[in-house]
Image (cartoon, rainbow, N blue to C red; front, side):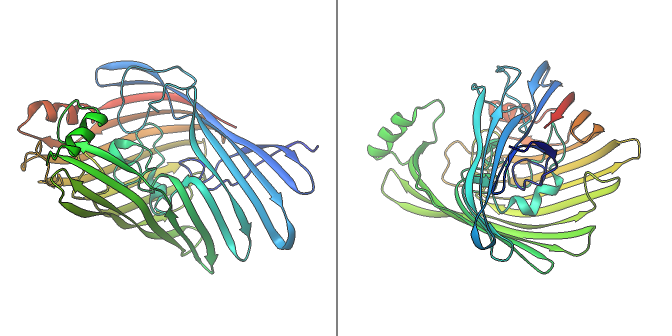
Length: 402
């Protein structure tokens, strides 16, 4: 057995496109590496002070050299909650809402060849993430306008744009272009009702009794693709699309098809970990792809994210980020009997912060968020719920990377 510390590029296992890992085993054919990080932080937001988990995780990366230049590969990753569970529900994914100490984040297996590309099967970062990952470097308030963490800031598993479930994916490169295509092969159905505080079994009973306010929803296959043009060592351009389809059946027997669609582009200048200037921005148009803060599907919206940082020679990296997710008014898909046609949903905020890279794997940070969102409804209870999860905040923390 040969043990040593190495730096490995493990694409797609973290919000950042690459991390360090510890190679714990290597022989003539096999390599095993352990990666991840522990991140703990103190945060003040929504009138509370709390110590919370910063999406800590651990992963195991397996590689095996096989014949004719092929490599077999597998990866498993679990989220870790080292600080215990919390009763406060936080916004923008800065707290993983899990009761378990370990919970599944990623898991896939596949084959790779320098000429023929890479094919993987399992739960993995979606092709869409290639388009927008470059603005996702605020540790506490990462982006929620790029269409990745869908369904009220979840992990994007259902529609394939985040940590995509049940996904078949192919990657390769040609000259200065990297491309990625995927499909989700899954079958899912559920019931939904325009009634507050109702169980799924009762909603199903309402549907079967012919209640027009009850729906059966099938959301099965999705398809996506992305391309990156490496203009130079410093400049990259990205573009991509992801599409799925809801099949809706109402309690009165009528049916309807609804497309889940997102498409957009991005630009990247520099390297986030290198000294000097780093700039990234992306824009997307989406339809029936995400929900508002109380779970109602949004008909269409525009998302914009920007991120600018500068790493100084003393290893301080100040940054500023801006996010806008604008659904406007009359954004809730119809029919929805609890929707006011004049409701407004506009998520908008800025984050400013400083990361101090003591070394590449040991970091201190402080970040502050200022909210500029606009959430309006004639139902003041619903408006208050939307506003609450988009509050100002400040946090500081420590990240230890393997």
